Amino acid sequence: MNPLLAMFGLGGTELIVVFALVLILFGAKKIPDFAKGLGQGIKEFRKASREVQEEIERAGQDLDTPPPAPASTSPAAAAPPAASPEEHGAAGAETAAPEAPPSDKAPSA
Image (cartoon, rainbow, N blue to C red; front, side):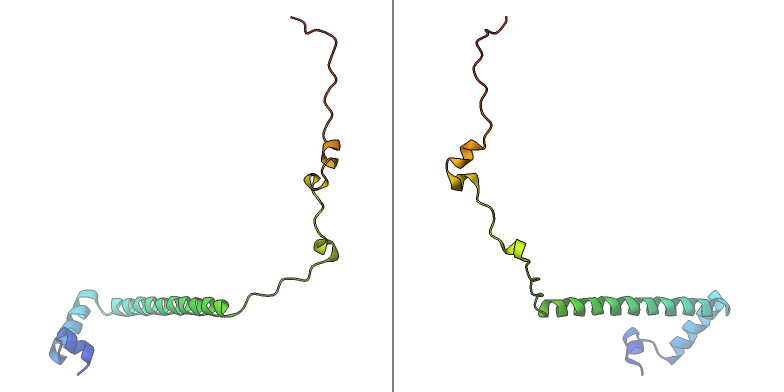
């Protein structure tokens, strides 16, 4: 006996009764439609589970491969950065905007 059927406690006579009831309730025309829909659902489920499994495997392979080496740098990119005004000392003060000279005119009130 099939282990799945034994799990539900169904024997040969019970299966015949169940199939007869399904035939009476749904009719001979609806049963193939139900079976077709069930088959398509199982097919889609298997396809989706296979895609998820492949995606997980690809992610695992991506973790195993080392990252690519950085691209070679151009001479301009390899040049040291320009010095800041703090590094030049007083030279930074020369580049600041000069203050306005005091005015002899008194503010009008």
